[in-house]
Image (cartoon, rainbow, N blue to C red):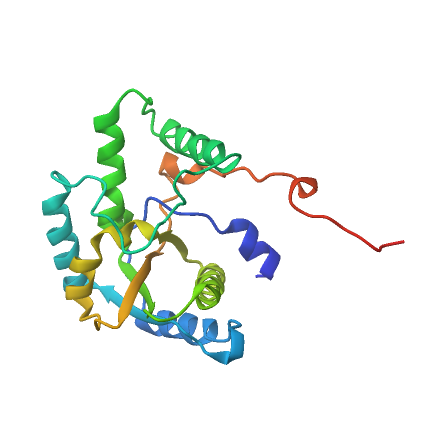
Length: 224
């Protein structure tokens, strides 16, 4: 698979099959992803991989609290700026509308939306969940390194016929995740990544989010 094909076919999968992902493949993906660039070659990322009973126990613990905290607890870092300005606010709203439309859930049906949102905390049925963390004293440059590392994981997953869903929503359950993976106090949970085989029959997996045209984000100078 070409890199361009992996990038084009990558999507945030929100319905997985229960099929097991071999540990050997996950090890290959993570080892290859470690070639992602990082300033000064700091390689500031840590990954904890959960499957089977440990993952089931974490999901059960979190879902037991979702009724009282449907959107999770406040995370240790802001997932979005507040207030979120334009055009980003509109893009985020439109993405949500398109997502729930695949399930036939109108904006007015808040209970149904919250039930779907709670699927985050079941990893959308994925058999594997990766948790990416970073040393607390690292700065924004190192967090950008982690973004490149996560992108590498997601593209390499496509090479193996897998799909993924990056889930910053887990940052709202950092205490529960921290307990499950024995996260040291000097490290901060950044994101989860659900990994597995896509359920091709699920309507929600047919969503392909839009992208703005090149002219809206790129400027070229000095070309003849």
